[in-house]
Image 1: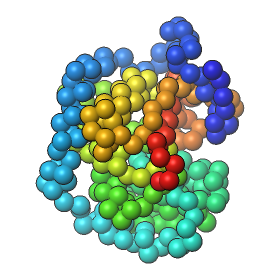
Image 2: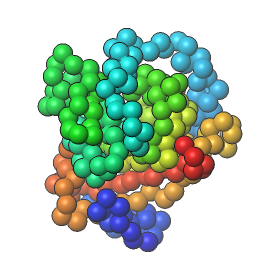
Image 3: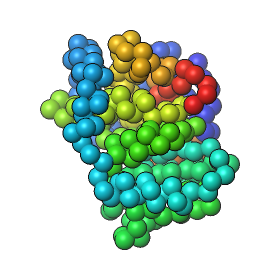
Length: 263
Ligand SMILES: C[S@@+](CC[C@H](N)C(=O)[O-])C[C@H]1O[C@@H](n2cnc3c(N)ncnc32)[C@H](O)[C@@H]1O
């Protein structure tokens, strides 16, 4: 199956042969996936212990301040909201702002170094174009503030999140992190995840299904096939994507769609 999204051709992985998945490059991750049993146990554990995790992890002052400041800066015009979690330098947030001019785009990252291309060092929030705001905050804290204040997003992007490929760090991957059920609870019509590691996206998708099967409270998103992105001359959405495309590294996308349309 082939179709277009954001000007990029997508190929359904199920319809492709193994040899057509792309040549390996210096960026290709070849680590084995998590055992399915381990993934299931982790997701179940995190579904059971979300409240405890959040109780033990108070929202950091700087993230709370950033969230409040953003709330003051955003126009109260009910424009659709787009969240770009882990936006890095903000390249993708600015691009999304151009692609969706009717929306307000919020890019969030904790790295001052990455954000400093657009945010002044003494700022937690900066409006960087007519409809784009960049925010320096911890994602778990920011997601929690959004959920608690009932902010909802038409699209939530997680573009090239840190994959933590080594087994010893797998609990840092978003789908195996204690905050994973919170990520599912953050209202969004769609979650779009991209990575150069196909296995990361397949495990992410499986984790969404595991959470949904385990507890209907977390049965929020419909999963889909992981698609390979085929660059067709246009600009990449992010710096990591550009780096991978320049090197000939394959990149993939997973789209999760809210089961109810009214988020
Ligand atoms: C691999 S980079 C990808 C950046 C960008 N999306 C791109 O594709 O070029 C991952 C980004 O997520 C940010 N990040 C990772 N964990 C985070 C957290 N807990 N809170 C906020 N930002 C985080 C990092 O600072 C980094 O900028």
